[in-house]
Length: 56
Image 1 (cartoon, helix red, strand yellow):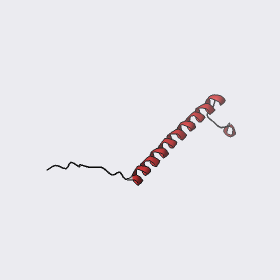
Image 2: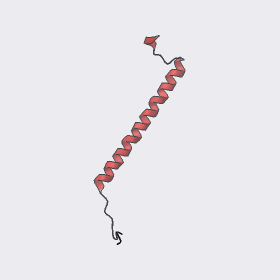
Image 3: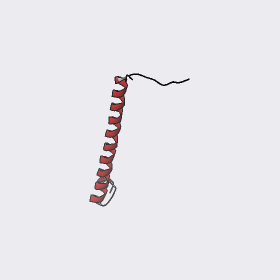
């Protein structure tokens, strides 16, 4: 028995749009995490301490 499909394949537009939006959200989350990490490293380097001013 052969289960090959011949002919045109119709894509689901809503599913493709949902996957695209989901991948964009993931990309924005990664970019936001990277920006927060850079800000944290900059704060530690510029002050010389990881403790905030109100804790010193």
